[in-house]
Amino acid sequence: QRIIFSKNSWSLYDSDKSKVLTVKDCLPINSVTELSFAYFNNSFSRLFPDLDIDKSRRIFTLLEDLLSYTNGANILISKAAKQESARLTKQGMAVTPFLLTEKWLRNISSIDGTVIIDANGYCHAFGVILDGLSNSLGLASRGGRYNSAVMYCGTAKHSCMIIVLSQDGSVDIIASKN
Image (cartoon, rainbow, N blue to C red; front, side):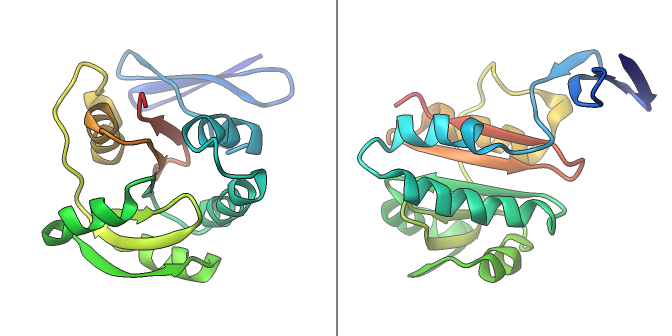
């Protein structure tokens, strides 16, 4: 085991150099640095049970590719992507839905804000500023992407999940309770 200290945080690694725990500003951070298919599909299949595993794998592949190119991004996967992109159109750029590719996702996720896609992998909007009510699950130490996702999913009336890719390399999956 090994502990690495940095400004305002420390991380614990096990014997095979996998990160076990990170504590920042005296608060444990519940993130992973590698997105596994099992971790992703657990939430995806619970929220979108009518879709087959190929849809989950396709979106996972897009996200996995994005991890190596991004400085941070939020990707909202929603059953109500069409309705939400219309509702939030003044807070982002709604588009005619198109099937995302790795290249498109890299390009549009570099724009500040959230990318909204449906569970089939079609993009409905990007650069969206999400809304939601503040709640006790937010963490001031985690920053805007994470807290925006927590607030949005905490008040969502539809099945959705947000993949938060932070600049520090951590990955969080925030899911609605539906």
